[in-house]
Length: 606
Ligand code: F6R
Image (cartoon, rainbow, N blue to C red):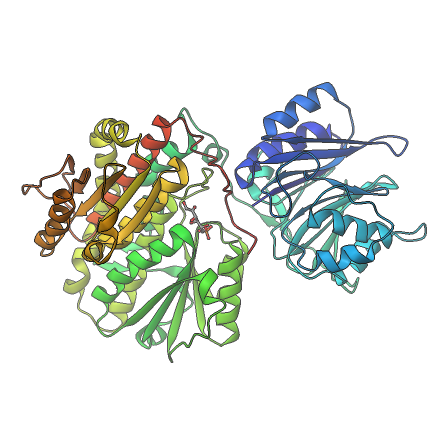
């Protein structure tokens, strides 16, 4: 959510900053800006409403050779998307970019009488505050440190001053920042993808740390100005993973690469021959695994739905295990109680979601063991959990989450199998899960290859509707919720997901010609019950698109029958069909599928 870049080195800063912002654009795309520092205390501030391409046009007409600068791509929190509200913000000699939220900005603003505010942002308050503490004798780093002591909220910031053109100050509290280091240059980014191609050596800033970045190195200090030793790590982001590679959209690429990314999730962890699972990073021995009595799963959005689907599998796998699943944004403010011998699974693609992180910290404070089900390596949540599983789905650039869901569910099923086996469940009782996990990548591959065209054609038929109702039973209920989320966020069709058995308790009143319905049916003991819900919708003039693995007769306007060997894990394959369906509906409606309106990837604000 919002992207930050910074550069100090020997190369032209404008080029490095704008190319970095293009990489980070998926984080926020309502406005963008850069400032570079040149000779004679000159600064060139360029800001534009809209996407980074608008900023690029401005840069073309204001090119310079400055070698220091900072930039930002914004997802509005305070103040509408506009050039005036775009970062960097300025006060006196100082320019600042900011991710996060300054919660006490109104109180601070009331004190800052000498600054005339132009924007509606909390960020301008922060830069004005730093400026108010930046007298002739003070260094920028000290003014920033003093200012941050007065701030309540979250931030990742980069700050420059025309008085000190050889330094960029960065600081972090709750919003990620990474500092890439080379011999003669330092590159700052809120996300490792902006460092790819520049360096793989980087420092992950921790909360409460401030960094003084120069061309030839970085010094870290804490909020009391005490030096901290620097920790340079090797980051692993593959260039190919952040490029479209011939696909029309990142979303289609990410849906299509699920067979490969899922193989990475399973690799080295599933032993099909011996029917065993080995998850390396749990930091739990067999005794501790055996002792788990309750699992709490937390996440937001798609990660929450991945948790919900996994909870069905976990309770099937481990007899007697109790499970609850909660959205982190709710749980963090509830007076929740966790039973003895609980393990919390913290599910997040980005590993940076503010609500999930806050919830993790609260759970840890209560002394409960936390495990991450995380995609982004080195992310804040990944570093704060006690152990966990990296899902290795690779970077998700498209805002809508797809491949992470599939890998998260697979990781949680593996976790369930490992608990079951530790508790003495016989290998034969978990073997069908292991076999299906092993086959899942191939099954997803076949479904994408065999049904893509058909799904695209069906999507065109439903693309003109304003409303949609998804329903399914049992494991297909969370899949229905996820299908509805995917459709609404990229097509802007209002979509609801329901448990099939709940339709008659209210939502069936919605059925009319402005709605279409997506009915999910598994060929199992609940098939007839699911069919009844579908018939009830048909009887009220519904327009049903049924997705099933069954060959049995189904009366629907459109039916997509997928041919899959899978039984237990067929819902995951059905979800891939839904992902493609949402994608093709959004394309048919002419939407920007990778950067849907009002959204941004990685929600680092509350
Ligand atoms: C939906 C989507 C969001 C995220 C949610 C959690 O397609 O992308 O609902 O799933 O913001 O994000 P992470 O997984 O990064 O914590």
